[in-house]
Image 1 (tube, rainbow, N blue to C red):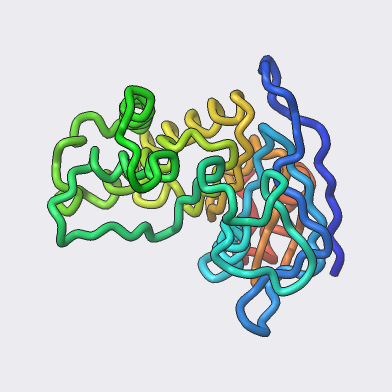
Image 2: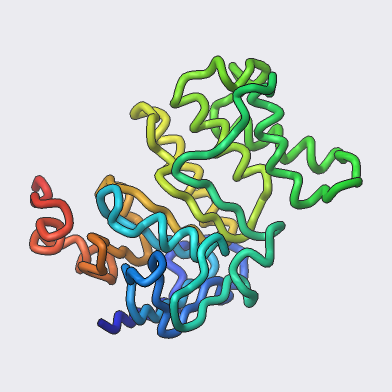
Length: 256
């Protein structure tokens, strides 16, 4: 199946950034081993665009994100992120996995985990600067982790840990964000906070690829991809989220 949807118009208004192509694929096929999930994908995302990947667990959302992050090789075709191979621009691309790995055996505070987001900029030997500290502080404030920033990560609730890992990603101040279920474990207030963060990041020209199972997360997207071990639909929200497509993806239709 060939899915072509070149995105050339930035939907965010009142911004000062210059729109450039950030993610591009040609005849891209992704999957695991010999198992293909997405076949012959032609995609072009611009700065400020939001691609929302929707589907149940195991539908292929994480596979595509890992391919864009450079953690899985493409099975066929080509893909570039910020003009380079996936995974080759760690300072400019930040990835939030569905199940972040942090050592619970070490006495790491939430603040320490957030600061790890600056490691790509620091390298092995450069010392933390005022810029790094400001980036960490800003990320902590925006994600609402201030109240528990000095608590050990292992003592935090699942939702608090999720906020901490999102803050780590934001502290990198990247140009592309790859987010796998960023609202998992969050209450309604937390989900609203994530939506505001995504809107503000797009407003400064960040391209976001967001994996979710929540249809509401797709309402403001530039383009939506419904997945169910294959591409069910690919296009603007008004087209992709039709009742027939949602029923095929989830087995139910949207409430009106």
